[in-house]
Length: 111
Length: 123
Image 1 (cartoon, rainbow over the protein chains, first blue to last red):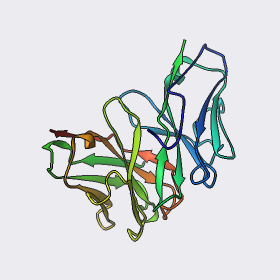
Image 2 (image 1 turned 90 degrees about the horizontal axis):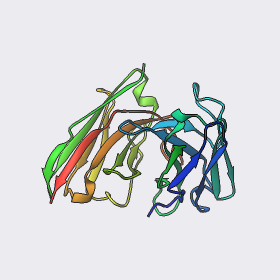
Image 3 (image 1 turned 120 degrees about the horizontal axis):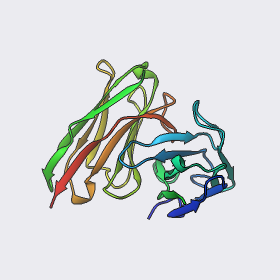
Image 4 (image 1 turned 60 degrees about the vertical axis):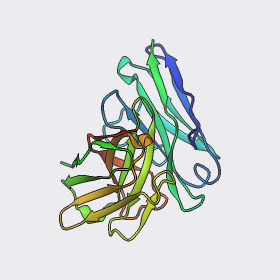
């Protein structure tokens, strides 16, 4: 069971807006920034959103992130078929000796 | 161009050892923390360990603490993961990834990833 909680699946039709939630606690999301990763089958993860809401160069502005309290969200607007992938949230966790924690991942299906 | 190339994966028996390496190029290696993240077959990402740019600060996941050791050779631009007392549940693809700061505490942002190396532990 992951420290950060994500829905296992999400779906939408092309052009729709989809959001993926990530729930944590004060020791992780509450006190640290959230990053989001996108992963296609058989490939390495790719940094998609950093510092809660910043996009690395090359990431379309259709992708956006937000954080409030101990939860974060990834939103994808104007959904495209090529957005079908797994999405993971991550944050540093201050509990015990410190660690990085990931969400369990959300498989996004474009219908 | 940043490149990360993992090696050292393979098949081993329960209780065995393996040493993974990740050769980095395309950036000033000592300026960045480096991390290992693994992914069991069909499962999600699991963070394993991180080492600061200087090598003086290290953190481990509870699941590997006492069995795995991360290290870096800044003269060779390489990090290593020594894995001992391997268990079936350590079977995974192991990715190395580059941090965006020299320090590693309070950071979960990794901007470049290797292609991964597969570790299989038979029981």
